[in-house]
Length: 332
Image 1 (cartoon, rainbow, N blue to C red):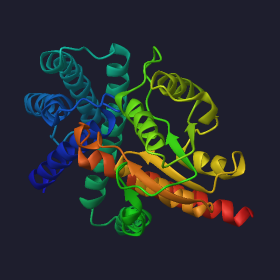
Image 2: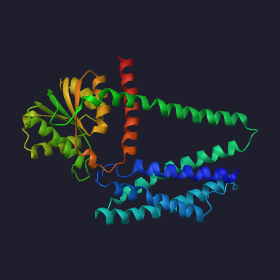
Image 3: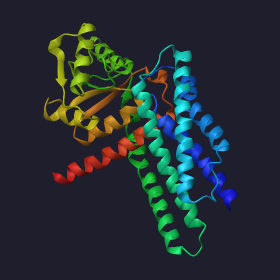
Image 4: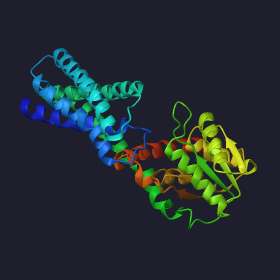
């Protein structure tokens, strides 16, 4: 029983480390190298944990819970510290740049929280399963696990619907229909105010649409810092300030859609973003009564984020958007 449980826990650890690394690392770097993403985001964590867990006997389930968790947490923080230092070196060797040390530390804390929660949960499941007399506890535990599984499956439906419903409404600049205005959704801005490549690309696509005569106005929507950065980009691209509209209250995609019709009076728009984001954006705009099409950026193929991370994020965000939309309808 102990050997089988140890193997299961070990495999679970590897899955959790891989997923958490992919989800938490390189949120806005957008460096066009898949090798970079895999080698720097995942491999150091996996290797360090495998080596130190084996050396430190991290899967001895005969230990008392306190000793077991103490050993695992100590080994984990040792492995993640070494892994983050190796990430530093690998990032420099591959891209000749070094990440901000503060973000390296924040990422380590985020992954550590996920890992420790998983370890407590998996150890609890092992203890419950190893005591046949605790039938009620087993029923409660597995019922809880089943509920989480069902919620996870249900959360897929809004995203699946948005992909099926809006795939035919996404165009490139060249073949897009005309619209009254373009909605440029905000994206990452570096601490010094420099726009990310993704943000720059979205503004450039808006300029291309305007130059082809397919829109009359451009709405720059996002946080105050994002809209300021987009405005500077638009002016640098030679766009007339008379066609630019600032929406500094677009803190989310849904906020941007609502503001388009309530604050700016546009009901026929072209939403500009990366394709994986446009499914949700079009769903949200449609839900608040805006006729919209999506204009995708051709930069998407160069993003380093794995397909898993991009679409997992969109699954969660679309489910959250669906709940928000239903809440707004109830209030009305």
